[in-house]
Image 1 (tube, helix red, strand yellow):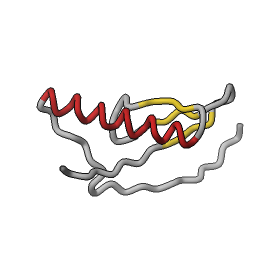
Image 2 (tube, rainbow, N blue to C red):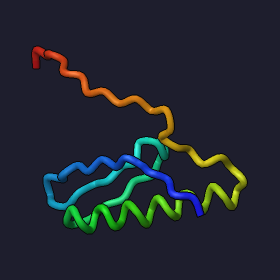
Image 3 (cartoon, rainbow, N blue to C red):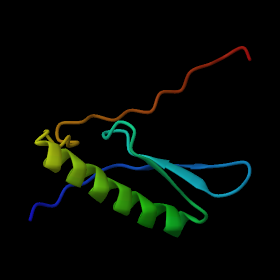
Image 4 (tube, rainbow, N blue to C red):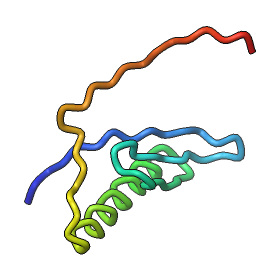
Length: 77
């Protein structure tokens, strides 16, 4: 069994709860009412996503070699 690491992004929603996206896995999105629930849901949806890729014989994207930066930009808004 191989262990893979994925970044997840949690966005607090105005109506409550957290939407979770997995940038490396396009379309891999879930939701949880709390941070802990959102993280648990993310783990589940990532596992299902990878299982689906394996069933289709597709390559599993990884974050190997990924560089991440946060840029600050000024806006006139």
